[in-house]
Image (cartoon, rainbow, N blue to C red; front, side):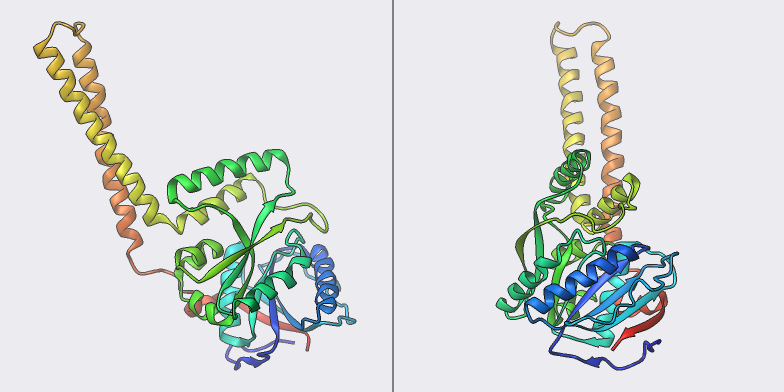
Length: 331
């Protein structure tokens, strides 16, 4: 069953909606949905489910045909025209929800089960405690990945703090109240990275400590290149901040090179301490550093100015271009 993008928002104001982006991870998703249903039933929380099919090449088949759910109500698949990546699938899903589905709040989580379904009621309760006015993110206190991954992730977090001044503490796992969703879908940076966009746009938010669970089925399809691209996407949201910090560093390099060159000339002309040819070599190297600093300063100025230009993608305006169809699996 398909639904039109021009349809009016469904009146389900008393329910929560769970949004899950998925790319070919249907076996894990099936296990996750069953676990979510049991967890929500135990806590007497009624929810609907929206699966964002990020251009999967493997059809869901009968994986999602399970009719004995107790707490899950409506289940829909929002199929995208092409694979866009996890973050952009989330952006399109959030924009679609804001335009077409009425709910109390949206729970965003991954399909692999590493976002523990048992933590969803805690996040929802925290959101309620905050009067449905703040985004509640799950803060990772312990990860389940390999040592190599954790080492590189630690290096990434250190680099992120140095370049942006902001600690990396959260992923996608979160609850977004409707009031905040209406504000978030006009943030252009949402196209690059959901969590970073929420922080940069200064949305009211809070954190709750959680432990990352293990995958429910199979292995992760993300390789090292994908992880690096994901990290760069998060930092690109703070392009202006990074540009300013690197501009300051370039200016320090320029002044240091100038001071070094002047000092070398003074030593050469006023003392007998200089070794023959030493001053010329030193000044030459410092002039190269000076030139490099000037070039970097101009580059970072352009980075800052480009960040001030109008955005190419606005989620609430442009999401529909990427939606192929909406299939309703369960009312």
